[in-house]
Image (cartoon, rainbow, N blue to C red):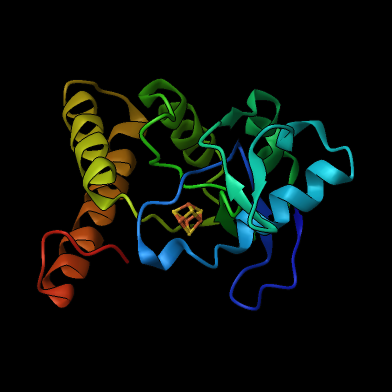
Length: 172
Ligand code: SF4
């Protein structure tokens, strides 16, 4: 959760840490190496997330959910581009749907920011977003229209990405 040198964003925000390798595109995962470094520096959130194998850090598959991090975007008063989970994949199968909803609520409550979410698990993302659209369509209130639009936009982005990739199995 910090300002970052990544050129396409202003800040990283990590309510989740930890992942597991799922494709060849994960081989040189920056987050995996960084998590090992942070653990070596004694940062508790990253303890047990990686192990050394063949001299390299590799994810163990353990996931840390950081409830305290959920309030961080609200503390940023000026609008920012925010890279969500630079140290994980929000749609990893071991991140509970309820926690993903909490992350989404934190984003919904801080609409001055622009959130950037990368995932290699687009199928789970689509499934969860569809569920959110359905739940939202059964509610009322001032937030409803905005939420419906936000979920639908995310789903449309997903569909366009799928079209471009020309495959139902390709990750971004
Ligand atoms: S999905 Fe992303 S965070 Fe997870 S191992 Fe692959 S590249 Fe790393």
